[in-house]
Amino acid sequence: MAAPLERRATAEASTESTPLVLEAGLATNRKIRHSATAQVTASARTAFGGRFSPEDEVADQNAMSPAAFVFNMVCDLAPPGMLPLSYGMAMGSGWWVALCLVPFCMAMAWYSMGLVARAMEKTGEKTFRAVWAKAISPSTAWVPVLVVFVVCMGNCVVYSVFFADLLRSFVRGLGVTGWLGSREAMIILPTLFPLLPLCLLKDLAALQYSSFFGAAAVLYTLGVMALRLLDGSYQEGGQYYKDLNANSKPIIPTGPFEMVQMSSLVLVNTLAVSYMAHYNAPKYYRELVDHTVGSFKTVVGVAMGIACSVYLCSMTVGFLTFGVNSRSVILHNYSPNDPLATAAQGAVGAAIVCSFPLMFCGLREAAIDLAQILAPSSASLLEDAFWINIVSIKLLGMASTLSLLLADSAGLVVGVIGAVCGSAIMYIVPSLLFTYAAKEEDLESKREIFWVQVLTCYGVLIGIGGFITSLEY
Image (cartoon, rainbow, N blue to C red):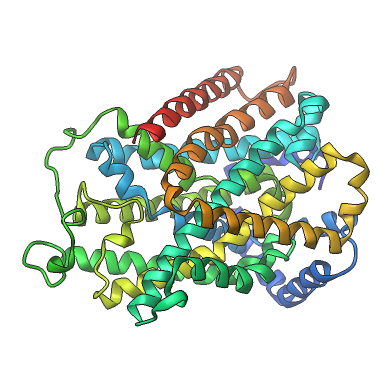
């Protein structure tokens, strides 16, 4: 990583020359593409043997091209993030409120991601723990690490339930019955393969190839949802209307504001989870090739902008199709006799499997940090790839076990995690890191600290309100 002062000197220029950044990124991507196979091979070698040392961490920097960054983040966010938005809208958001909340939450998430990068540059540190220790206090450096651990574990559990239910619907649509068509099988089998080998990889750049599939699955699913809305297959008299039970038949409200109420916070909670890539913010920043704050904010903006477009489309199309009866996973509204929808369930289920390792990277890094805080003598041991693999296997087993136990409460887990820990890692932790890292330094504007503090208060209020609505609804 370049020196913090050098980064700050170039950050503003990078932000003001977005086309040049993208052009440079494309050129760099062409250079990196030639070494991509070697990069994945090196990641696998470190995963299955040897030691993980600080030198390996430095080598992981500048490993991810802007294009790979965007694909990884979109795959991280969009497949699971698009599924519950129609339900969040159905729980109590008027049209205009919902359509404004999606880009508003994106802007807030983008800004707070930038705060993490800026705090890293100001302190010269590479992880949440190290930045917090230097900017705030070493004695409380466990706070952001614990938040990241809880967020990532909760979301890994939810991801497992999401892909298990979607893949179960898919295989049952193919005629598979018995244990192979059960939720348990669809959690256990994908966990053993491909998740286990993918979760042993150490850097995000090596996951870019699975991210391409995730992006394709999202586009296909949006196309199917739009087609079924336009051809009226799920409206009264439509081809699949008779397959729907009473709780899935479309009820479309009229009027832009008739549904606005306190339960609108359900959609806010859902969006907090949908835009949550902050648990991996330091790792994303470290691995972005030739990273500066400006280039980081550019690629994050592109990725979140794509995710925002996906969310607007999926939320709107799903709600126009099923209205207030939209389910928490919108694809479960569709008929099992609809072959295109069944294929979409399989595609999105597989896409969530592909995005799972991105969430798992944050979980593993937080778990290792917590272990080193609780038992400092384990620091050298956890540099060994063998023991890192043991930690990875145990964490993956823990997430799978919890998903089996909490499968019927996944909605509550999403709500609570999104409200409490999501607000903390998206708004509160980045704001505190930046505020304390800046200290007496001259800022671009004295007003920024004020607005950062407002963001902190917003995170606290959203967390409290979201927690209450999660329990109530």
